[in-house]
Image (cartoon, rainbow, N blue to C red; front, top):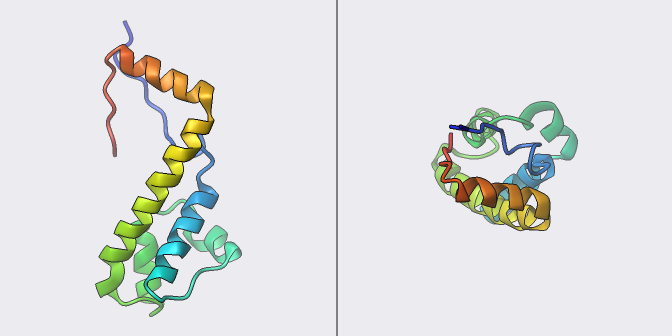
Length: 110
């Protein structure tokens, strides 16, 4: 009997590199901050949790710490919206997730 299936969303179900890059920049732009370049994202920010990305931007005096919460919240909302849209496009992967749900396997988020 299968009790659990563990996999990481990033790169398994969806290629998330561009999604995280674009979501962060949309959030930065919304709150009137400078965006980061693709090369800067690849070299410094790629793979880091949003809080770590924001700390780096704070330490470089590119955004004030008081904006971290609203930037993170907006960035996460954009990311979730894009991920849901992308997963819907991946019919085989969506079917696998639905079958797992039918078998009553529970999702556990980090």
